[in-house]
Length: 274
Image (cartoon, rainbow, N blue to C red; front, side):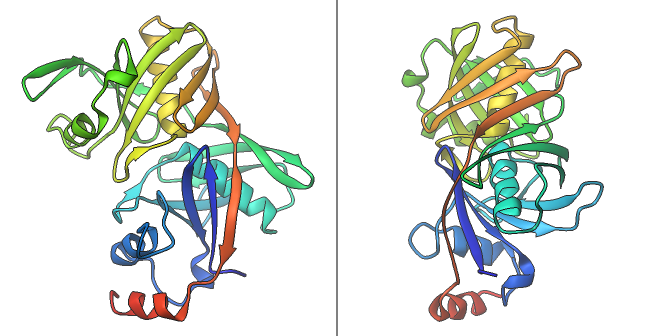
């Protein structure tokens, strides 16, 4: 069993680790090192095999800053592929346990390997917050959770958004005591929305599955889109279907990049941080 497997969903990359296969603990310090783009393997986070809880398998989701996330749409697709492609299961459907709830997944294979995953990301719950002020500018917001927190801001043109300036200020805004994921959304049509993403604990990201679900739910609540929406991000597109009972179904691709072992040099550096 390799120490790690690295995969991505539309450019949002994760390292998958089975803690039983590595000779160290996944502490915030070691997570930050492994995710570092220059000093470590480099990724937008780590997915760790965990007890199944109420699901068939369990996953813990760590941000590159060492904090733990409740749920990740790209993460659950990547983890589902890992489980099937690396022999943890031979099933095409199963349920993942995350801190943000149970996530049923369905796999689509090409040449014997998982290429697409559909996941039921649960239902959205909305907060009463309607606006926030950032540096003297007031933004209309839709604040909601899809198992993890999101702040959606509809704008005329996402290309005009200064994401690197506004993203961290909104993530850490006093209105969000546990911080939040931030999406600026441009409604192209009733079936397509363009977004840019500032992810809690990770920063600017090419794609996000939970963000896509949050934006679809928020835009439908605002009467801007229909029940099936394509979310276009810098990394590509995800398809979100909003079921009549409120469930958010996300379908999108996933690809493995590499797998391997941590070198003795990196293990020595890890040992110095434990």
